[in-house]
Amino acid sequence: MDVVVDVPTNLGLKPPVVGSVPGADKAPAALRAVGLHEHLLRTGWREGGAVLAGRYVPEHQPGTVRNQAAIIDHATRLADRLGHAMTQGDRLLVLGGDCSTLLGVALNLRRRGRYGLIHIDGHTDFRHPGNSTNVANLAGEDLAAACGLHYSQISNIDGLAPYVDPRDAIHIGCRLDDGHLDESRSRLRAVVTASEWNDSPDAPAPAVQGLTTDGDLDGYWVHVDVDVIDPSFLPAVDSPDPGGVAPQVLSALLRQLWPGAAGMTVGILDPDLDPDTRYAQLVTHIVIEAVAS
Image (cartoon, rainbow, N blue to C red; front, side, top):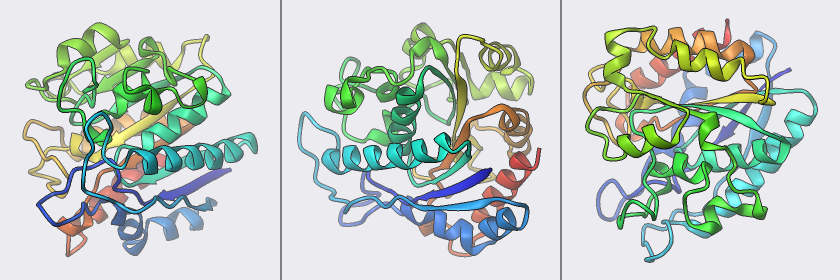
């Protein structure tokens, strides 16, 4: 059965301004308010509840990521919840929340075997202690963490690093000025930039085809950060950068990926930047188009 799980977390983000907290944790409720869950339930889906995160604390201690203990606790509980659902044969739609949700998703996948990851994001999220002195916010470091390159407390929960082998991971959607593009290209199975994707909507196809048909994998997961969409269409995200793709380009790829996926994460919409819900409605439309395939 197809199951939707809400994961309202903002633990992996920096404060948008001093004295404030990020709004990405409100996204599951915003999507519910514009009818996403109602539509899914009407078409045979089941609700899998919510996996709540701990309190956001803006202060950051050197040698850790912001909210590190809370993130690890949340990731472990999220992995437990998703693992139980997958054992029952469920396919999962995980609604974040920020990209730190990938930690719990990837931990669950590693517990179950060897899974591929298709990471669709406006940034590589490949910052880690080996390439930066500015490590602090896991939502900008989630792919590196999943690939075993972060602090051991983050990347090696239960001694399971890497949760995803870098050669089993594809990144799609970063901008050409991404500071970790070269390292991502050297470590990952494939990288397709937003520029390449805009030049040819089929640019991701060879890498995607190779991963989704890889007989050595137990399956694959799709991770979507909606900041892959150009801010001219969807600016209500933590880090909007020009040069992204149009919503219909993302929708077309997700329609191809969903039928064979073990699950999909969708995150980083910030309802604080979307008071009239127009962007929540856009994300809802994209998700419904994807999972109707």
